[in-house]
Image 1 (cartoon, rainbow, N blue to C red):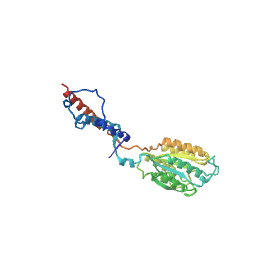
Image 2: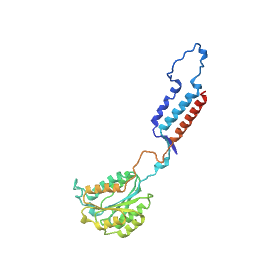
Image 3: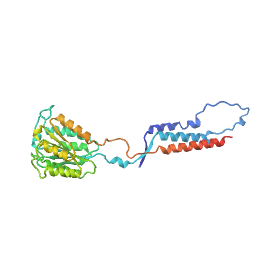
Image 4: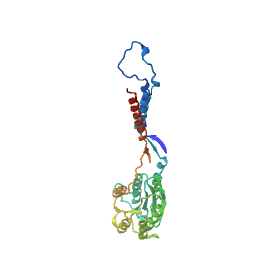
Length: 302
């Protein structure tokens, strides 16, 4: 546990403490024929200014919001485990998907929008699975999302073969997610083709995902006739997720925004975690000292 103040700048008020001893108070003048009749006493020897100083100091400490926090808690992330499973089969090399740049391929546009999505995920533990004829983990689960985006750039069309193994893509994503510790886990599957390769069937893969409580969001890239929309809808529905159709780069960007809202990432905060305010301690002492002051004053009265 560590100790700090929420508003440390208020501690500057403690510089006013010497005024309780040395600053002159206005008082009505009294005249005595002899100075010897007046008792001379230093303010340092009187208990009353010290009591006032203690009350003032305690109230300033309370205003500064003292608290303790657990430094270890700052090292733990609170997001979810999330896998992007991206189709890198030969058909993803087709162009015309992005209206702003017709020469860019579907894969290049998908990578760019995927990087934008990754940047918004804050404290998620994310990984990348690339698939074609087979599926492989391009990046295991990591909180280093900057490095994740860099690794994504190193992938290319045809790297995993020319066909489309949707079942293997989901199974490989599940294996990658098995190393994560988060309670919430999800897969985002992006493809522009029909399942025509691989060792695992989509039916078997979605059954495994359902048993593990992992949602599989599916996104069809390009024209609806280019991919198996019915299969993607079944995968998403069976796993408790949602299926989307991205006919353009703009549509894919909007889909990513919707998924970002459906699967919110924990917002990173600069505040201390597991904090416990200690305001009641100085305020409690203030009440005790005020009670003591009242009792002493009452006793001194004739």
